[in-house]
Amino acid sequence: MNRRYFLMSSAAATASARVRLQSPNDTVRVAVVGCGGRGNSHMGAWTSMQNVELAALVDVDDSHSERFIGALQRREKKPVPTFRDIRKVLEDKNVDAVSIATPNHWHTLQTIWACQAGKDVYVEKPCSHNVFESRQIVAAARKYNRMVQMGSQSRSSAALQEAVQKLKSGEFGDVYMARALCFKARNTIGKTPVEPVPPGVDYDMWTGPAPLRPFTKNRFHYNWHWFWDTGNGDLGNQGIHEVDIARWGMGVTHPTKVNAMGGKFMFDDDQETPNTITASLEFMVNGKPKMMVFDTRHWYSNHEAGIGGERAGNTIGNTFFGSNGYLAIDGYNKYQSWMGREGKPGPTNTSRDSHFENFISAVRSRKRQDLNAEIDEGAISCVLMNLSNVAYRV
Image 1 (cartoon, one colour):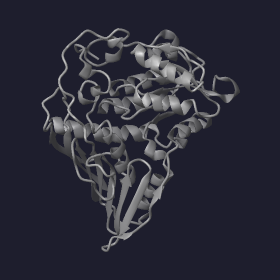
Image 2 (cartoon, rainbow, N blue to C red; image 1 turned 120 degrees about the vertical axis):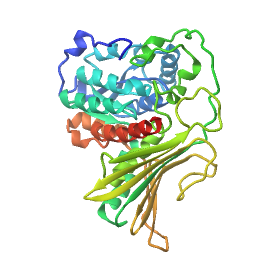
Image 3 (cartoon, one colour; image 1 turned 135 degrees about the vertical axis):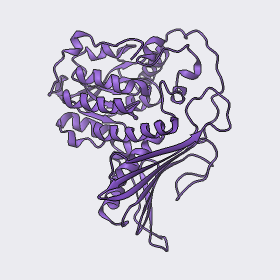
Image 4 (cartoon, one colour; image 1 turned 90 degrees about the vertical axis):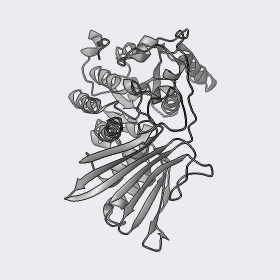
């Protein structure tokens, strides 16, 4: 961090790693950090579970926090304190866990701080902004013995768990290749000028460990995904879900080869990350090569293997190819398959995920193996995403 170092307050840094919940009646008290689109899903989850309580909201933009407070009132939920700085929440010994839905460049550092403060963590994907951070986030979870889950909700889908079990059991024969598909019809972000920071926004805190750039609307809410300082492009936004599923289904960890090609096509705008990229990775498993392809497109595109709806684009899922047939995962909670040369319909299933509930169960059990997307798994998948972006950039 060339700009400055962030230091934990002494109270939070010396907090002991707690084993028992601090809240009464075994209620898990969770603070939501980041009041944007995913943060809304986090708040909805924690306020709809029994014996789980929303403890606080954290956002650098006061208007976001105010909107969330308004949503709580409309749902007839009790209001909670709001903060701009996560460290204020980490000093509160009555907070058991934090759920992080901030921009990518903050995920690892905020998770490490939370672990140091004795909090369990649900952190959105991707859990790391680069390969170095993937190592550090796991090291912190281990050192402070915390439950840390990445927001790869497909891992908690009974349907996808069944699909992966069938892939690994040999039902589809030798599974030699997987494709991760991220086709989304994203429009241009245009160009926005440098302007004053909006009232009620702590832009210095928002920038955090990233280089401090002049404020523009394109570098701020949501469009931060398309700048290397703060995001990872669509490969690290939507695509990391499919990257993780591909690695899970193939049963692999780190690759032996990575290459990528892509670019920014059609649009002349502020975006730095490619809007189209194809990355290929080779793995060796028991002396046999296996291959993954991550394919991201930004505009009108085809569907594949029954994945996607009626509209062009928005094809989100995975395909796995084996010697006995192939399997397609559509989104997060559905799979179907086809067997043999004739392509006869094979197993299929659909179910919703229970990823937030899974995290709370592990917070109670204190068993790392109970987490469906334990941080080591999430960090390895992020390594594949980050290496693919590195291959593209070099």
